[in-house]
Image (tube, rainbow, N blue to C red; front, side):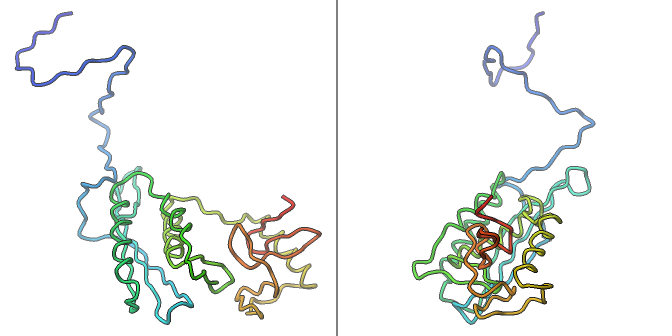
Length: 232
């Protein structure tokens, strides 16, 4: 079948053998909006602020992550991180914090999968040693705790799956903890290790959740926080 061309040819493309033709969008299909670096910043963004209080400084850090809502009001509505700000009265880390927020914000606006940031930030270790947060969880550095805030946020908007324990695991841990304490579990209180979750004094650090909650139970090292066990 011959096709007559009435206009000047301004470009062409050779179709490779076996290539699938491009699918055109149907007129009745809504045009979906995707995250990309050319997306204009809306006048109003929704967000959440996370407080970081470390034993390394008397001043807290406040991490604010603002999100853009794509395809609002449709079945394809998505909430994606757009920018991050970190504020503190402590000016010791000002330069690298500003640099970090600009780089992370640029990654957010680039679109695609940004969840890799969590693992990258978690793998940053302070050469002076890390610290234990309230509750006995170990943080290898301040950068890693910023990554922890990003992880919490990505879980809250559905970009990362929450790794919460199911009801059976919670019941198992509660029963084991009560068995270890020799009775009903009491309300959480700080112990000699400064563990505000009330885990036994002398509990070891869990390699999975980084919490000082690993104890010897039934001949196995078992974490009373996440349920991880050396016996599988």
